Amino acid sequence: MLTVDHIALRVHDLKKARKWYEENLDAKVLFNSEFYIRMSLNNTTLALIDEQKYLHNHIGILIENVDDLPKNGQRVEHRDGTIGVYVRDPFGNVIEYIWYSEEAKRKVDGEA
Image 1 (spheres, rainbow, N blue to C red):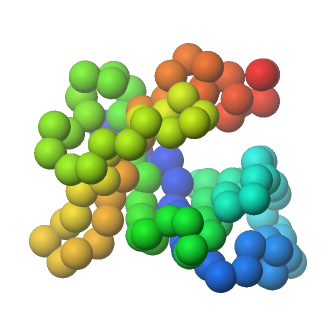
Image 2: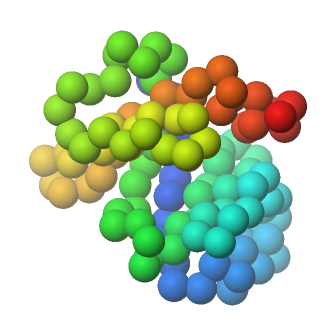
Image 3: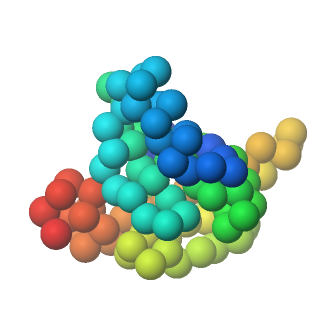
């Protein structure tokens, strides 16, 4: 069964976006960097991404086994140990199939 890992929204002002989501949706920051803020909502994770650095809003779908990542699409090995494969649905929306290495899982869980 596939599950949503995150929803990523491109914004032009990360600080302003962070403040808005904290104040209006009670989102909590899990990770903060120069171009990316990962926030926890009650039932999902929101990624605020700098529109100058990232090309697409997208929905992240969790993949448990790296071998199950799609073979088609743009494969990106992220700095945090995750691997994403970006594909478009028939309407042009971007879906990222994302796999977490053991190290990346520990970072997300706050153990690293």
